[in-house]
Structure formats: structure tokens, C-alpha cells
Length: 345
Image (cartoon, rainbow, N blue to C red):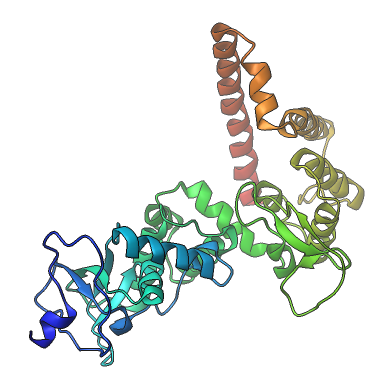
């Protein structure tokens, strides 16, 4: 068996990933564009900038081990993707499949890859990897924000970034806004919907920092929508509000009311050059009351919320949906007008 045959297998009905050979054998992937092969993961260069950061659930030892066991048992379900590399000690450059590569390494398995006969620079690798990761193990919210910021630094437009992620421009802008948060506040941000963080109650910071001791407990942290409401505040105000919300583990509606009242008492409820007139105050109060009234339903458990809806007739529910649709149009119109004026302020 020649050296290529020992390290690379064409996929012809092979279901399980072959075991790694003890010796690493170089393989030339040039001329194999579009081919699906098994390569030695030790000879594949990993991403120079991994969008997933330390602490991502998908990179935990438990997650990698679980995936490795699955690949060993039933084979690799998703093919990793590699391209050419000019780094001599490697045969290929990875751009999709970091977790699969680590899982195969942990189990001593060859990695199934599809070859792209291109030589990508590091910026392109980041774009391709970020786009590929969506639909797999989810990125944390702060990681998405850092990726958006990185793409913005590369000179990309919001529209271009939205195409990469397959998301709306508003979604991209909201994640970019998170980079205005102080680092302490960003660390208190819940990494995913319905997730929780471990905090040290004495100083309110995420457990895992250098400081040890204190009383530890779980908190829902700062949710995505709440974080958006803090981005225009000075860093010290951000930290004061965020730590208070986390310390008292506030539900969303209660936290919104607290932030709203904090802004009013601190005189930071708006960023305009002159005092609001009577009509502006009426609009502002309407927004506050709406938040409070919706808060009653937001704080309910989803099962309780569905239970009382299921008691209503289909026609009543259709009417309610129509009311909400109209409200969404109205709110969007108000918000777009305010945003356009804000851009000129």
C-alpha cells in the first residue's frame, strides 16, 4: 500500500471512520478538488482565528468527547471542509469542522473531509467558518458580537455580514451594539436563551475569574433585549444596572421596569439636546406603560401562557393575531421615525 493509500481513503461505502495510523504520513491534496477523503487530523491546520471562544459549550471536553463517541460508533455524519495550505507541516487547511476535527483527534480517528482546491487568506477562512458554524453547535451571544465586530473592522457592510450569517440587518446591528457594553457587563450577558450563569454573590461577577471564595449561585444573567437597553449608558451606569439586575435575578419585565425607572431618576432617559415637550412625555409614558403591561405576560411560564390561550376559540385567537399584527406595524413606524431623527441628532 503506497503512502497516499495509507493516509487517504476515497469514500466508497465506508461507514465508520478508520483509525489513525501511528505514523503521520504526508498527503498531497492538489488535484483532488471536490473529492471526499479521509485525512489525518494531525496534519490538518486548524483555524487561525476560531469564532468559538473558550467557554463555548461546543468546545467543552464533554461535548467533544460525546461527538467523538458518536463518530466512532456510527461514522462521521457531516463532512468537514478543507482547502490548500502553504504551511509546510500541514497537508490541508480546515475551514469548516473544528469540533469534528477535535472529536476525531480525541478518539484516534481519521477525519472525513471534502477538498476545495483554493488557497484562502485568514480573513476569508474566518468568513467561511462563521457561515458554516450556524446550524451546528450554537455560538454564544458575546461570540457573535465579537465576530460581527471583527467583520466590521475588515470593512464589511451590515448587509454583507447579514448575508454571511443568513440573518437580518437588524440582527447584525443589535449584536454590533453589544460591543458598546463594558466588559464586566458583557460577561454577565446570558450566553443563550433560557440559559443561566454562575455568579459570585459578593461582588457579582461570573464564577471562573481569578478571584475565589464568596457565595456562588445561579442567575439568569442579563438577557439579550435588556443588554440592548444598556448600550447607550456610560460604563459605570451599565455596571450598576447590570449588577443590580443579576443580584436580584430579575425577570425580564421587572428588569425593564427597573432600567426605565433608573434612567428617569438619573436623568438619562433620553439623549436629546432639549427637554421633552408635553407630547414627547406622553409618548414616553405610553412606552413605559406598555412595557409594564406586557411584563405581566412575559413573566408567566410558557405552559401557563399557552393554557389560557387554549381555552379561547379559533376566531378569538385569529382576532388577537390581527391585533398584534397591527400593533407591530404601528410600533415599527414609531421606532423607524424616532431612529431617523436620532441619526440626525
